[in-house]
Image (cartoon, rainbow, N blue to C red; front, side, top):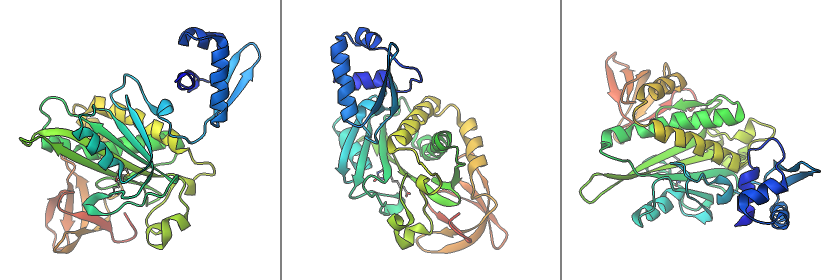
Length: 328
Ligand code: BTN
């Protein structure tokens, strides 16, 4: 659509772009450009007209529009699908993967009716308040399930980079992949691996939920003790679309870096990991133990010292970790 192409030209520019330049670039008349600009204004985009200089986009509505978010030619976000409501963007990505969707597909929803967290938990997904986004990635070559199992930790680093870069707020990681702001959970990550019939890795779905504008009341009594949103830390939080753009940029970078730059991501993971040095409860289906979190190993497992002084490595598949004081 013409207005989408005009929007792409205007996005990210700090100086006006002339109607003539746009008409040349898009191969349409200046009248058509003007009509496209008017259509964008009706959608809520604030576009200033500077005499003799052209058009400047000064504010965007929080539309999560594929036109605004898609990244033609990039490894992540070449195709973006927006759904007002779906059960779970991870489920939608998996359905599309089964239908042959390409690597890099992004599914975003305004609301999830069956948002899923790790360990079969549900994930609160209120309409318009959070960003609910999943990316389908198809690993090339012979990436082993073991290497792919580190991916979720890499994603934690990418999400921290994206949100910190966007807001200036310091993001940390609660082992293995909760993103924290002020010691409360800002964002959850659910990575799922799809296998071929002969049990080789076929695709990964990376699901990310970011709390953008929830209030304490939105979270409710149980969640508000452990969750936070960007809106609780900023007078004007970014829009969901801005958060999505920042995430897609970092995920694109990550996909180019994976798995070669393991050392860089591991180093940053360790620096950001707020669990280290803390007293934690190691929770397993059949028992709970107290321990001190000592280090993050090369494979992103956690080295802990138990109360009896022995040390062991625990992996996220077997235990979940809760702080003794507070969430971390
Ligand atoms: C967790 O905290 O346990 C992980 C939460 C992951 C939530 C995201 S929201 C987008 C995607 N769709 C889902 O159903 N889950 C993930």
